Image (cartoon, rainbow, N blue to C red; front, top):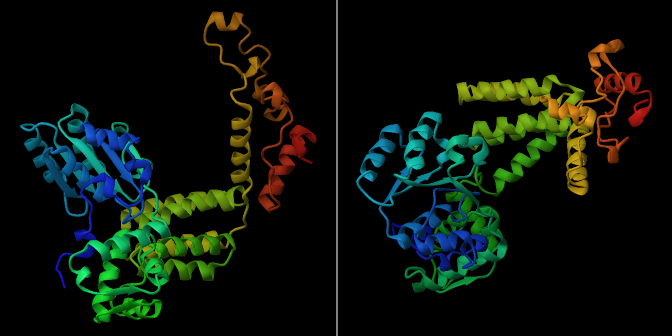
Length: 421
């Protein structure tokens, strides 16, 4: 068996040979033109594992013929970054590729900022996490972000066929691909994992001709491959089951799926971040303390880390699962955004406009506005929506105890307007 993994042997060196990501590899795309011209800006490649981020970085290095340095955020620090920057000062057009850039902390990212800003290096960062959360805003503003899509079934099968037809080692074996469902399911959209699994299966069958069936794939995978992959299909299926269990007020299901993720080595921040989102999306004003606990949970697990972070996560998960639920705020912002998209930029009513200058006051900006605190109970009824949207109902409180209190408060203020009764 070749010591170099099949996925590495099959890594393309030209953009034209990349399977998937046509929105980036087509001749009309910005990235294609940038690579072919050699005028590549600093950029962030964001997408799931095994969809081509590292491959695109290698293609870029091969095509533009510029000095190319690679660092991994897992085992590199500020010292390594500074060493590359010092070398880059004496070279032209240096490209620095950083894999898993989301794992760099703020000081490590700050160490890159000056060199990127001055053009000493062109940064290529790869991340599986939303760069808006994990890359600091100053660095992000100096990079173009390209989103890579998950690989579909057709693309995954094309990768298998390409490997069987072009890899010199596999061409020595007569392979009959009788079934592919198990290969695709276990790989979970990860092309690198797919190719390496294919090689493991062929080696495990150890026959020529080699007939690949779902049963054989599962047998070999259970012996040699960890079936939980925190970046593959199980990652998405289990987080889905986890969220739905909390939303469904089942702390037993929620804590089970939490344990599955912890045992599988899931990123603690990924779990905690989803809890913060859920606390607003699915609980909201039915229990405002849920968001406070989830936010504190996120900060706490960042400080503590595994294994003790599991205790903090368990507390938060069981609390959220046991809380009353409401998606009223979530629905309200969805309705409001849809309304904005439909109606465009409607004028702000004059009485709500800011009037910091005499000219604006002369133009009636702010005229007629009534200061709410001057009214009884700190309330004066007046219109806050554009004229065209008067009376539009966007927020409809749910039926939990706390939301009934909200509805009662609003009904007393608006006396039946907006349906608050």
